Length: 274
Image 1 (cartoon, helix red, strand yellow):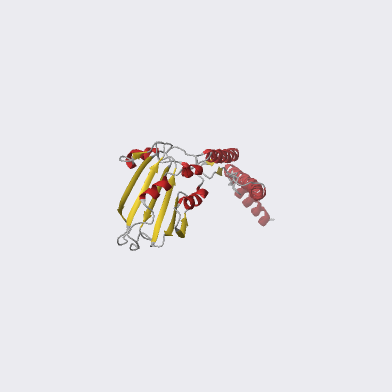
Image 2: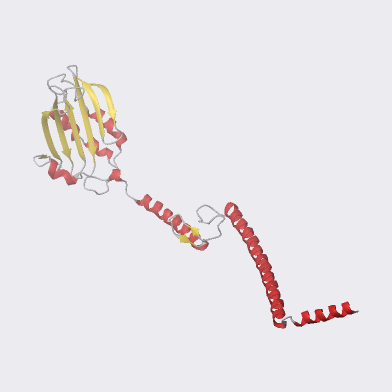
């Protein structure tokens, strides 16, 4: 048929105009695009697997931090990374545990060292450690050494080196104070430059002066002693029941001889440990 013959010729001519090289490039491009798509799918699958493993591992670390970590071990909870110790340094898990153990040992050593440390309350004025006095005996000894004929009123016991009482002989109240300290040798030159040395070597300094707390007409009498071992005993009396109130009598109820007798009594040696 003329029409069919013409159509066949046109189809052949059109086919002959196609560039075989271009067709090869088209095929190659399609293949390369397919390979890239395959690589992307494989990469996505690998990343998904890694994320899943990371989530599982993170959950395990979190669980271990909640259930397995002891206090002070420096474990990085839910991080899976290096532990940050309490001193601010970043360490691996083994190093953090070792550091915690080191701190524990250091604390134990410090505690043992503290047990061996001298008690500051047992130090004398010269800084050396002194045997403690039995201050529970201070007030009983003080009351026993007071002269007869006195009525004892108010008592103040510090529980340490100081005590005081208010006494009355019927002619007005008198405040009497006592202070007992061990290990005071280092201040002997400052306090007893003009002192009298008693036969047993005890230093005795006496004074009579106005009161210092504002009481009108108040006088302050003192017998200050130090034994050869540094035990210092000071007894003072005032002509008033308080240093800050006016005098109730011309002189204290205790004479200087009586104050000296209290301060130099061997009874104070009983406060020292045997």
